Length: 67
Image 1 (spheres, rainbow, N blue to C red):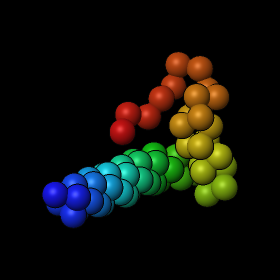
Image 2 (tube, rainbow, N blue to C red; image 1 turned 135 degrees about the horizontal axis):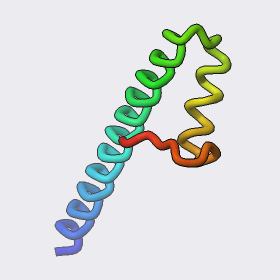
Image 3 (cartoon, rainbow, N blue to C red; image 1 turned 30 degrees about the vertical axis):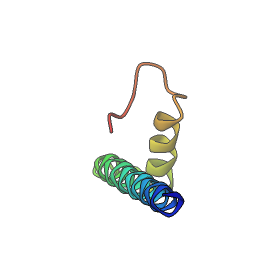
């Protein structure tokens, strides 16, 4: 019984880690696409990255990214 509970807990932790990784991957994709859009406006890559990170950090009023 304890072994089954330990296995279930290990599986739950594994699923949670997979979900966290999927979220990180998705957020990275969305942020990369936003950066690419800013680059198309002829911002430098460094400036585009700073803008995207500022948006994600809620430092720019009324602007957000939906993940």
